[in-house]
Amino acid sequence: MQKKKYRIAIIFLYTFAVIFIFYIFKINTVNSKTQNTKLYDGKQVFIDYHYITAYNNLYNGNFNAALRDYKKILPYMKSAVFYENYIDILFYLKKYDELEDALNISIKKFPKEKSFYQKLLNVYIVKKRYKKAIDVIKKMQTRFHPNAETLQSIAVLYMKIGDYSSSLDYFKKSLSYDKNSPQVYSYISKLYLKLGMKNKSLEYAKKAFLLNGYSFKSGVFLASIYEDLKQYKKAIDTYKKIKSNNSLKFLAIGNDYYNVRDYKNALYYFKKALKKSPNNIDYIQKIAYMYINLKQYRKAAKFIKYHKNALSNSYRLRYMYGISLMRMDNYKEAIKQFNKIDKTSLLYNDVVYNKSICYYKLGNIKKALSIFNDMSDSSPEKYFMISNIYYENKNYKKAIQVIKDNIQKISNKDEAYFYIADLYYDKLRNRQKAIKYLKKSLKINGKSPKVLNYLGYLLIDEDIDVKQGVKLVKKALEFDKSNPYYLDSLGYGYYKEGKYKKAVDFLNKALMNMKNKKDEDDIIKIHLAEAYIKLKNIKKAKSILKEIIKEHPNNKKAKTIFKKLK
Image 1: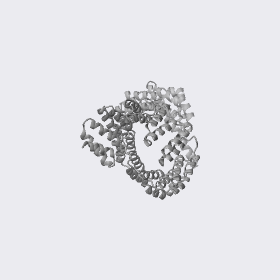
Image 2 (image 1 turned 90 degrees about the vertical axis):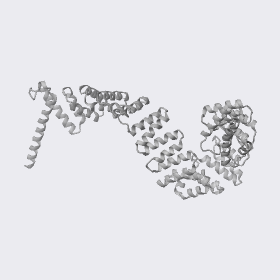
Image 3 (image 1 turned 30 degrees about the horizontal axis):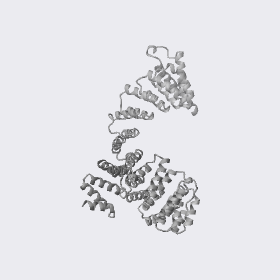
Image 4 (image 1 turned 90 degrees about the horizontal axis):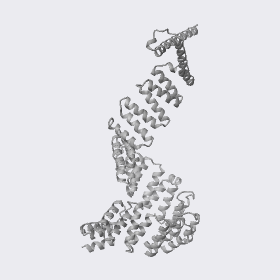
């Protein structure tokens, strides 16, 4: 009896719901001129039946059946709500072609309904028809009140189709509605970067970093631009401003200190990174490498030995351990470490070379040379490494002979001839042989800037053919415009030609591009001092020479020139 009462109640409620829906549909479908007609004419029954059936199918999750019912009554429906429901079903079923048609019809019927434009925009984005999507947003912009969001959407779509200039214009327009959007400043910065305008990119990246409250993401992006411009100190300053103190921040700072050859600070920040992430092998490797760069081999060995687990899992760390022991003259132990490195490792050729040096230092020359049999004859480094064994022991003639004897087996012959020329000139002071082999190298590769510069400088420095030397150096600079060594060669060439003002300009430019390599810029400074002397600017020349003598008291040439000025 109780169950029967529940069934009657359910039937009553369902019937009431159907009659109520019928009444709502009647208002929805019958226009104002026919509102006094009978409630249940044939057409209305047809509409009501399919609407209710669609509703039941939707309730039961049968969307395809519901869609069929909606399509049958679509021509009779005048409500925006109905079209919205119909479109939602198409969206759910991912029928994007039908959706596109239905939304275009809906926009014509209901031009003030913003949601239809938004849904059509989404369809075009899904279909990757970005130009059509842009057209939709532009219609929205003219039909509705323009705002920052609309303009930014257009900008993003222009980015997707690779029209960076148009994207930039719309992002900039959006700033008039929202002046403090860090995301927009970040987008603009990235666009300027794509357009190759790095200084403009920097301007907006700085603003994004500030508006983002010195966040990690925007800070890394700003620093990466500085790094791309090789402005590592500014990159370091940017990283330091980032509020979060995670291991990646300290790693990035350490990397940039390494880039400016400040190994002490690099070591300090790599240690901070390791403290945040104690088992990170990459950080351990970087710290060990910094100790080696600082020539603190004992500390490097002790540090690596302490991190036993990392040592057993990293052939790079094992290699650095071997190098540290080798530099401490512990050649036997170094060989043991090198022997533990697998032949498949990327560093294996370097392992062979250093192991060979160890045997050479132990007096076992036969073993030192036979060890290279492990390397393939086609390996480009093999004969250079063998030659270097003799070079390390100052047997320069034998070093040259190794390359000459195996020249047919060496694939990069231009490099081999350059190497021979360098030994002849720098170690054996045989300029004629040096010129001969530099010309051989250029015959193979006439676009090698280092060979062009070397030969050019030799002709200038030895007063063989200054005019030809300047010409060769200029050609080298076509391939590498900011190379400090090439700029020095050209400046010195102008000095030899008596063009002292030009010489000063290029020598100063060379110093500016030299960065922190103080040991290597003494020659440039001496050349510059000599040029200032010719221009009768003795005060400037003295100042430069004093600076050299202060940093390197044993520089005889600087001292000699300075004494003559007194």
